[in-house]
Amino acid sequence: MHKIKLLYTKLTTKLSDGSMDSHHYQKIFYCLSPVFLLLLFGILELSIIKLILSFVTSSLSVILELFFSSIFLLLNIFLFVVYIKNMCSAFKRRYLLLAFLIFPTVILLFLTTLFWLNAIIADIHNLLVYTFNLNLPGIFPYEAVAPVTNSLAVIVSLMMIFLLPIATSLLLNSFLPESLQKKDVSVKEKLMRLLRKLFVLSLIFFFSYVFSIIDKNNFGSISILTTLLSFLLTPKTILRLFSSVKDIESKQISEDILIKFDRIKFIYYEFIFSWSISIYIIEPKKTEDRILASAIIFFILLFTTTVIQEFLKRKKKNSFSGWVVDNENGLEEPTQNILFEKKFYLK
Image (cartoon, rainbow, N blue to C red):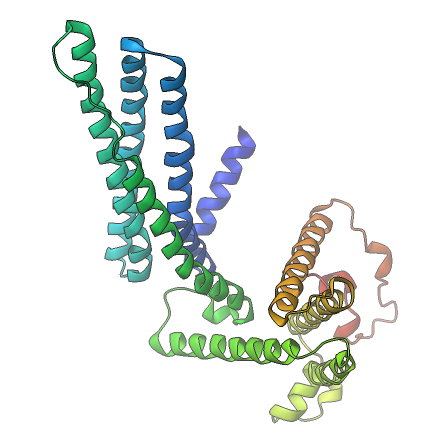
């Protein structure tokens, strides 16, 4: 129980820290909310009612239906109120996109609430008919199942359209400096953030196009790109080419900058490895299949690397402690040699 409370505290703290990542997580959650609602309504709630209808008959069936329908009604009303409050809160804070993403779930919860209210009224009618033997026809409470589930399915498919660019924007946040990681920044900083993301996205599209025309026959051409990237992606090379800093060789590069450069190289090499597996081992014939296979392998590698990184960082005993030797002469070592394990960790 303590661990659950601790996890809940961490989640709420992260989602309310005002960072761009937290707002992206919220948007992704609300994009996926119709999926959760579809699972709740279409699998859990309706499955319970179907189970009751298949095993129990007569007035007992109606009583059980009425009981569970009332529970589901209260649950949907509770969720409806929560989402209404969240939407109003987002609107008041001028987070219009967030409010817009919450709105479809509000509509769906309104529909499911009406559905269960209608089912309860029908169950009450049927219970009165069974109890007092009234000469009235029974009412089937679930006529609106198909329209509601169809509405859920349509909204889910539409929300997936928004999910992809939001998830992409979340990934691009890792390329932003700390000063642009906050949600509430000036208009100028918002423009700078957008331009940086568009630049990174353009590079991604460029490399995607280049790799889409690479197969077994011309895979060796990647070595040119790799050599160029290895040459350019060093802090001192960038400083020499694009800054006015003098006497660079005597300067010491920030460790944070070194980590960022190494992270980019590491991700690039994992990408190359994924592409080589897709064309040499899986050998898809179509370019689309080759890109899809490479993307799946790449994200598996990236996820595995991240899990291993977090595991090693959380271990009480440092696995790389024997790799680091203190400078006994008291001289400053180049920053490139400091704490190997910190340099190569992916954040």
